[in-house]
Amino acid sequence: MRSLRPFTYLGDYINGTFTIPKEKSETFESLNPGNLKDTLGTFYASFSHVCLATEAAKQAFPKWRALSQEERALYLKKFYKEIETHLDQMAELIARETGKPLWEALQETQGLLGKITITLEEGTKLISEKEVPNAQPKLMGRYRYKPKGVMLVLGPFNFPAHLPHGHIVPALFTGNTVVFKPSEQTPAVGQFMAELIHRAQFPPGVFNLVQGEKEIGRRLCIEPGVDGILFTGSYDVGLKIKESTLSHFWKTIVLEMGGKNASIILDDASLEKALYENIKGAYLTTGQRCSATSRLILTEKIADSFLKEFHRLSKELKIGYAFEETPNIPFMGPLISQTSMEKYLRFQGIAQREGAEILMRGKALELTPSGYYVSPSIALLSPKKDSSTYLETEIFGPNVAVTIVKNLDEAIEEANKTDYGLVVSVFTKDKKAYEKVFQGTKTGLVNWNRSTVGGSSKLPFGGQGKSGNHFPTALFAPFYCTYPVACLEDAEDSIQETIPPGLSLDGKN
Figure 1 (cartoon, rainbow, N blue to C red):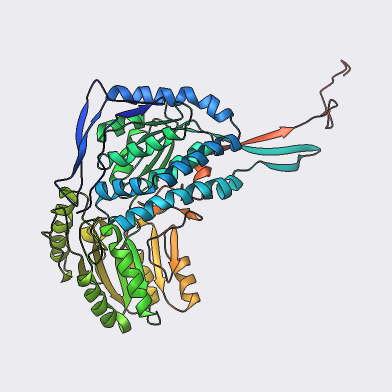
Figure 2 (tube, rainbow, N blue to C red):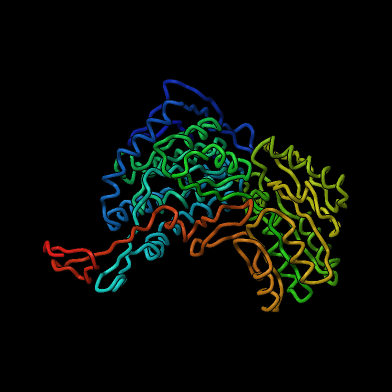
């Protein structure tokens, strides 16, 4: 078995220094869900560090904001070099804390580099200064973007580096300072990100790391010095963030939440491609993606043949430990925790009680090394059912609900039977059908002959309904990290407009 690097807990990163809390308000473990004997260590949280980190970010903001974009870009380029140098080490930590296969963890790490490049090259164009001649008669108008201040980034466990990085990089580049709280299930990845920031020699206080569980997150959200909250996670947690900050109306609250994403496969679809894309969409990261394909909507003509092959491929997936080598490299690792595994298995019974036919039952797997491994599951539903706990809940596991419909209109109606609205895919050779899905569905992303997973950092990424609150991230992240300021500019000494009646500047009426 592969030998893993030792991990040393350093504490929180505040004002340019790692500090182990003296007052230990919370204690939690970092555990490898794919090898329960692999514990990365014990982590501590301190309520007092919430204020210290926020104050450090607040104090660092004026000088960081005053730098030009070019000067801030130099720090991000150094950060890029540090990530590039430590790709393997970062990927190893991701694989250990999430359980995802090492090849997938490497893909996540490499994506960090692309995010920096896209932000520096493309994101800056979105918030570039604009001149508006004759904004008023004979007056030059201009609008420029200014940073908001201290941005709190709350990271998820499923992409513990990539998703918070997608907030952190544009926030820093646009002149904000950052306080980052990683998921309590992936604290080692969060610490390593802070180590790379430290190596890149960002000024003290510009980036800060606070470890902790739910209470630390809540206290950070209500901290008066926080100007914005950038969250990726579940709908339930996003709702609590919104509720806890109702009186903090000045804060920017960016909520990237869950999904119950549908993939529509029509009669004329390439079945081989549709099978590949939807197996990938349903089971990558063990279904623990907000963009995972959790619903298949099939037309009657192709339903039987598609389901037969989808079932076969689902049974043949390699499931196992992240660090297995050829020929045993897995496609899919474990779920993140015992709680997640219990929820996944419980929903098999909920689906059946609500009238679903279980085509493939998900089970807990006993593998070596031991972990929270499960097999995929498939449930066939009745299209006539309008209300369902099973269909309205993001299970966050390798589960697929299948509905068979007569035509595209029924498929679109079925796709909209959820309060979530992140991604929908349609598989067809007919571009008009794709355009009809685009117009008829309520989602932030619509894909044609591609799975629901695999968003691009060169495009906006955000959902409708319970999936988000209209602040798309990825390419559009600089918009929610800044605010536009309008300027009217008059360089002339003389008055540039007709003086209105009733006003005299020479004392004469």
